[in-house]
Length: 417
Image (cartoon, rainbow, N blue to C red; front, side, top):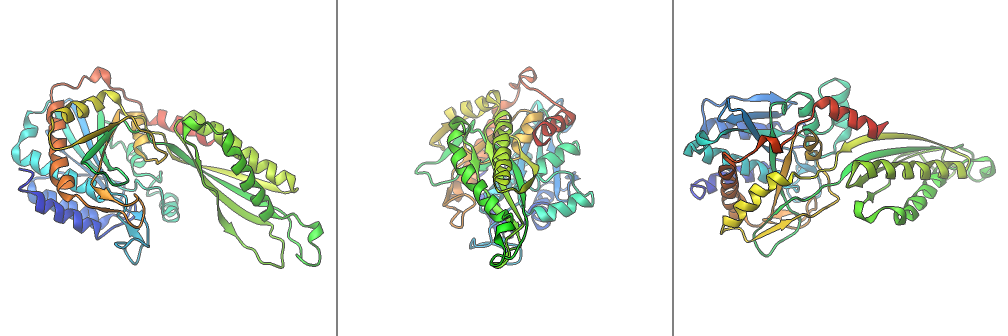
């Protein structure tokens, strides 16, 4: 059946790819999805949240609830060949394929009525704003109370979207090109936060009286040197990534600069090491300011939590792969320094993210594009249907866990305080 719906699903994917939208702004994308779903199921019911997010279910009323998650947003990449010329949004993250895969899966399960035999309710959740960007716009949403979190999943968690969900499955593009059709399981993602360092000095005439100045730019330069030297002291197993950039400055050549803001992300594989590395960065900033008799104000903004996939759930994918003859390679137990808000959701409920090939170029790069549409929109969705069929009657709720949103908030406070 997946081959008969392939052309339709491919066209939906291409429409979304050619109409990319940034997080919390995915209105055209949502309209495309809802229109497709209502054509399949005229009695479709939706639960809406967070400007553009929504969920719908197959097999309502069952005790066990499994979510299948698709992410709606694009990346800010204005030089990508398919970027929106007005907004700079581009789907070089692969999220458009998640949506198409979800729709292919929904159509098959609904029309075949396979879901009616499941002992669980399958909840399709379309989540906005996975990418951590366009922060000035999101700051405005925060100020007016439209959202409380930059990321779509933490915001959905706050709103109770996942309160009745027992576990979740997501899929995501694997960066790079593969000779054979490939999926991966158990890939760990880094957690990250943002640090903002505002160096303050004293402005004077650069030619007449540089002697009584306190150069904020020099403080930031010294901080960059300290960060570079400190990399040797970072635990390699944690795959730490730090990328300081100048966020704000107002400088001229004839005035010693008295203010500059340096921002950096800080990525690591564990919450504990994020905290440890943050202390090292803060000390480097404080020492750089003191060395040149200046000051530094420090702000910390939480990004996303690290993601450790739930091994128990991944075994359903592995065992399905072993019976499948259309996918060639299964990768297992990788770790990368990319992050995602699936890490936040995995604190509350067990989650897995199945990676899939089908692309060429660098993910988030200008050359990223799909090259194996048959795999993406026919073979891989069919494989996912096999995973969900195999899960029927086999998921042991005793192997799952559930934490509250209040516990999540308490953990975040220990990181940003």
